[in-house]
Length: 334
Ligand code: UT7
Image 1: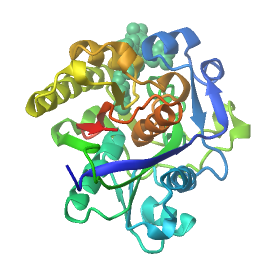
Image 2: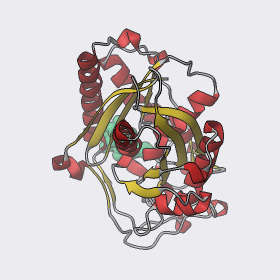
Image 3: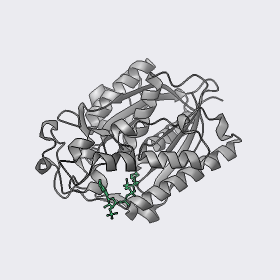
Image 4: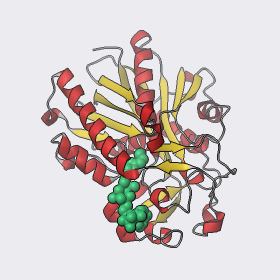
């Protein structure tokens, strides 16, 4: 197979500030025990000054470019999956372009919530079919701490900030993206939504002010019907994985590692059980970073890669689910 997307470098950036469950106990009526047992999350990262979405994205991008041995000037396209760009215009991708000096690329954002990175990968793959020499930078980056309501314990305990990136180009061998399928269902938008414009402008919080609850933005309308999102996530991701494997004539035993969107450890365990994948084959970062929406998958991918968990020839599954609803699955050979 030639011309399909092959990942040739990965990178990630996590904010320095770690916010633990114990600290959250001082902000909202919650407990370390509740958060750990219901979500698997023990801590999350919170962006501070100089760690705006585009800045973190650029840092992750530089690491991915270095690993790929590609210069910023060689890039043809930049796609950023994000729902928390610091500006509506210009796009986060244009700010990254400026930051890293990728003057020969065109750049745009993809808004698909937690599925943003998989959507970006699919778009890149379609371009590469026609132009396999293109060098494309894909990023998932989020600053959810600036948008969640820090007085709402149902949601604020879940999210974290960060960025992950990868460089892709057309594959010249049998490695690379093998198959993918994306989905959306806008009829269910009200189960998980975030206002386009905060009701009150929320600058990125300065890490020194945490955990002073008065310093947090409380004007953002982050709406989530957690139990319904949970059920849909397991069902839709499960169906998507099963349908893709069936279509490609592959069994779940052939999969070496699943790297899913990191939303809740119970969602990931239910998904693994649903598709009969041993949980040891599911890569998780949720314990350390919480749910960083579009950033979670590329951060996990970079960590798995740098830990040596990915061997050449391994069969990987990416599985995503997020607001919209949006979801999807990607099968690739490393
Ligand atoms: O990327 C996609 C984004 N979102 C998701 O993936 C979220 C998917 N959903 C979930 O992960 C889970 O539904 C949650 C973790 C959000 C909630 O877990 P749950 O087991 O569904 O709990 P629940 O909403 O049914 O709440 C159970 C109880 C309630 O109290 P009562 O009514 O039983 O007295 C809540 O008020 O837990 C209470 N509760 C909390 N207690 C302590 C809710 N949040 C908290 C909290 N600390 N942070």
